[in-house]
Amino acid sequence: MKSKSSFLNTLPFHIFFAIFGLSVALLFALTMIYPYLDTCFCAELDDQEFSDYENKISTLITNDHLNQILSGNKISVEGFENQQLILIDEDGKIFGAKHNEHAFIREFIYYHPLESKPFRKNLYNVQIVGGFSVDFATNIEKQITPYKLYFITRVNPQEKMLSYIFTHPRLVILILMLISVPLLCWYSFNITTPLKNLQIAANTVTLTNFNPDPKLETKGIIELRRVGKSFNHMISSLKSHISNQQSLLSSISHELRTPLTRLQLALALLRRRVGENAEIIRIEKEANRLNEMIQELLLLSSQKLNCHVNHEIFPITEIWGDIIKDAKFESEQRHLIFNVKQFIGKPQERHIKGNKVLLRRAVENIVRNAMKYAKSEVQMSIFMKDKYFCITIDDNGMGVPDDEYENIFKPFYRIDEARTRETGGVGLGLSIVENVIKAHFGHVWAMQSPLGGLRLTICLPLWITI
Image 1 (tube, helix red, strand yellow):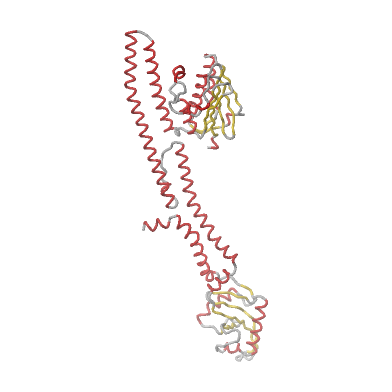
Image 2: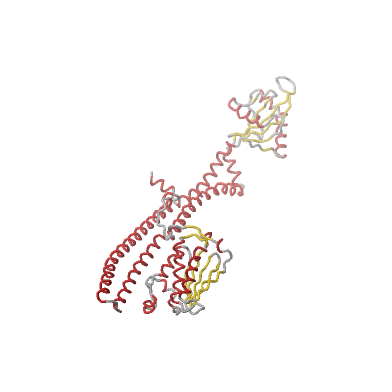
């Protein structure tokens, strides 16, 4: 039973049977049952048909065939060999019909009052044409009496319906469209909805949200369910892998901090014993760098795993407001020029959705990076580009070679070891910036600055475009 149900929900079955086969089957089913459902449709006789029937009726009266009907005799009239003749008097009495035929004759009369014009109607497997008003002298009363005359013919309603439909190609196309369009809409919904859910799940993964979505395995056709199941399995495996990596980094950090703490304690004892000297200062500096590297490494790993946490919608000014104040104060102490150019009208009315703390840290990182290497000037520009807002930081420092612009975002990458020892740092700052900006669907890149040093630019989408 499970195997049969699975087959009925497969893509080939939907395409072939549900769309093509079912459409044709419903067309034929409609053709078969329509004559039994259409008990209200009547067709008037055209002029030629009415004239032909009038001529036949004149022949019936002339040859006294109608009196034979009243007497209960069966007659055969040239041109009407397959038709049964029925007479009904003013009192509604039926002549020439069998008892089991009275029901559909009275049904016909119900839809065709005696005073109306003759017309044609199919009732089940018979076709009735009438009623024609006839006046003739009967053998019983010997006087002219008014009657209604009806012609009954046995027909195959399905054959007539099929013949009519397939002789009108436009009608065939219309019926097929009426049947297939709802099926196609239903079929499209069954495909597009799981695909949309899969797209949403993929987007959440880009936000480092590694939670499987059960709907991917229960909604839609079986092929898409299998894809959803594989996708959820991939997410679970990825989440497990990252969790193991995080645990490994935490364990390594813990193991490294223990000998590092002992080293710092031994260094303090050595300083107390022998006093301050160049070797002790060098050891202390390297120990501090090692401690900073461990902290930065754990921060980078934590950001990659939890960047999607604590997302909120807030004005873009909250990203750089306090950073600019701190940078101006610090630049004055270091005798640097720090200029800010803001080209966005009413920035407080523009918003972004993301992690405020991480975005502030990313902007602060590139600002401090510029101030660290600048000789005398740092310039910050804020502007709009399409549906993104961008922040550019320029400095007049030594700059970076053209072939190193992409490398500076790699973890632990340092261009000049001598300059690193002079300025400090472990080579993780820009890597953290890139990780945060990409997690918010933004972009970050480096290039030569017009001031002569390095230009770093970050662009982030406004929240309505995410």
